[in-house]
Image (tube, rainbow, N blue to C red; front, top):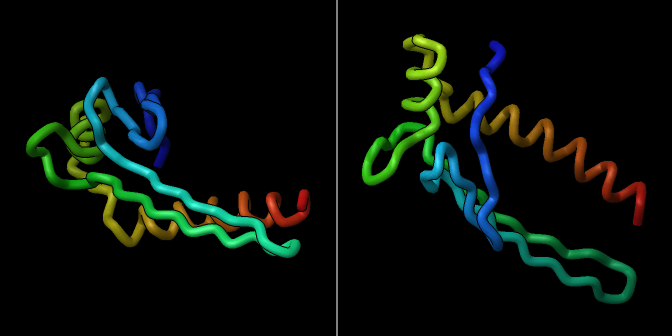
Length: 94
């Protein structure tokens, strides 16, 4: 399924906004000790809760007029597949 252009912006240091409303947050911490990277990260994305701001599924329903909802399992699968690609790239550059 393709998606239309979304007005997504990052507000430093860790908020993600969609159409001017906060929809997600990211937290990453890392340390490098004795040649070893330790990274921990957390991601929160509002898929379904329209209150108090908005959610990704509500915005997509308005843009593409569909009842299809992105399920948590679909999102997590896509997220971790892409994360794994980026992580492997990172490891090759270290």
